[in-house]
Amino acid sequence: MKKIPWLLCFMTALAATAFPNSPLPTGWWRASLLRNDGITIDFNVNMQYKKGKPVWYIRNAAEKIEVTAIGQKQDSIIVQMPLFESEFRLQRNSNTISGVWIKKTSTSTQIMPVVFTPGVQQRYPQAKQTKRKIGGRWGATFIDGKKQIQAVIEFKQTGIALTGTVLTPTGDYRYLEGAVHNDTLKLSTFDGSHAYYFRGTINNDSVITDGFYYSGATSVETWTAQKNEKASIPDTLSAVYLKPGEDSLHFRFPDLDSNMVSISDDRFRNKVVIVQIMGSWCPNCMDETAFLSEYYKANKQRGIEIVALAYEYSTDFSRSQKSLRKFQQRFNITYPMLITGVRTIDSLRTEKTLPEITRIKMFPTTLFIGRDGKMKKAHTGFNGPATGVHYEAFKKEFYNTVDELLKEGL
Image 1 (cartoon, rainbow, N blue to C red):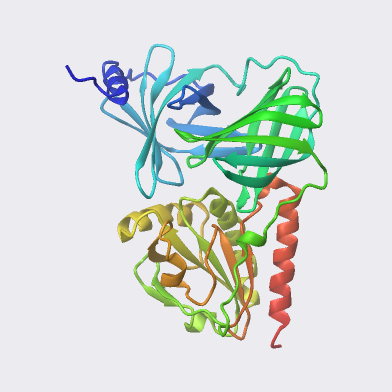
Image 2 (image 1 turned 45 degrees about the vertical axis):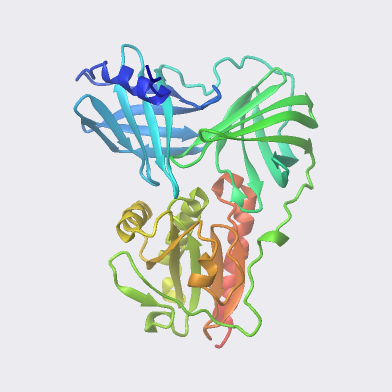
């Protein structure tokens, strides 16, 4: 007799439990995503009802993600995340809700079992005490096989409560929330795309060892950190430049309504143009999009244009269009979003779309074009609002760059 795969067994067990029609209990729930190695990635959800309809608020430290696309199909609860190709398929049991989280990627569909337990507001309720004080800036080394990545971790600690973020050359890991218990720290986040869990041993208030970073269903890296208020991130590997002999970009792609848009169109002529290289799968692009959308609405009358170039999981226009529509509607985007038709994992993505520049190494990347149509500057990665002072520094640099370009040619 053949063995039934574990996921089929899991789903079969769920199917045996009918979903009662009575409303779910409101208030805080603790959700646990179960990895293949038995590790869980935990987060918190506040379940409420607005005008008789269920609403989730997923909490990650200062972030609150509102989820309204919650429906029932036969005996299943289906929860569509507001961004990303991500959803929950759940069923109600006697005291919990359980099911699976499904996330599509460029090459596969990731499925992780999940259990929601009611009445738990703490992410790590077992954390009760600590003498350690680790708030501040830390220089960290993450190890993935033989590859080492230098990063900066910033912690904020109040008693046992711990929040923070990780800054890398590609951007930040957004809002992390957790706790310190004795000599162990735990931090996690879930936003529909990221599902991260960090654990480490605090040797003393200046050294962390035996760190593990779990991402999604299977990925795991190790890490160590030392407290260092001057720790910085190397960015030389991420830089993007014009190739020798080039000074301008030339591209033409369809927007979300299938209209062709070119950088040489009249709307861009004699204006400062910000080219956002992004993808609807990218949480850092989400944060950058929120910033750019508000900036554009407040400043477009100054002679500024923004255009987004999207590199998606698929070459299928309809799939990319559906994902990008979520971004457009969520952030009320009024600048053009163009679908390049090139997958994000395509090794020739730059050559096929922007052959005038060196290889695009990370998302997001932002290109600045002057009034004369020539590319003036490139910025790679994005430090979002979770990074605090770093986000403010980014905004100051961004404002200064655009202001200087607006002065040119006047």
